[in-house]
Length: 226
Image (cartoon, rainbow, N blue to C red; front, side, top):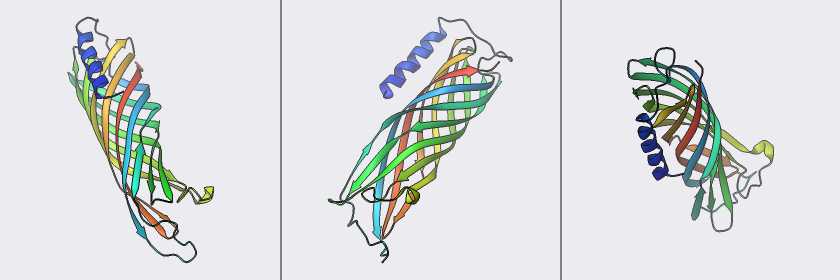
């Protein structure tokens, strides 16, 4: 799924407004109240990295410096839950989500490699938007995102108990559209980006600083609990 696909979904959502009847929640909006959902995502993941040798006699360096790097994107899925309120056409909401959306980067010095993996993401965000004819919701979002990063060290030689496993924080922002298609059920398409804090990994005499960059296209099925 790419940006062209998301545009097609948004155009379809607007077209839907002209042909379907309005659905209503407790206060006249299908987006009011508690909701749960299933989400699928196309995750773009890449990092830039820097290397610094910090000599440690017990753990001599196996790495001589970064000469090349590659990154791989992934698809993923997860669950979300939130609560929304309408004040006329104005919409305010809060949402949390847990998504398994992998991806990785591999760096090499020509002979040795180190791999950093993204495992999952935990999001908390606030949403502000407006409804269109009580059939669609257009929204923007800002919030927190926590990315779980893992590594087994240079040439993946670390024992399990010495794995690098950390969650780095990020500022998340984005927007999307949600359309009521059946009573209590809506479809949502959105795009988000994360401004991620650096991750520092010390592996013996080798210190790596990773600077992740991520973005996602998400499509969700949402059940509104009214």
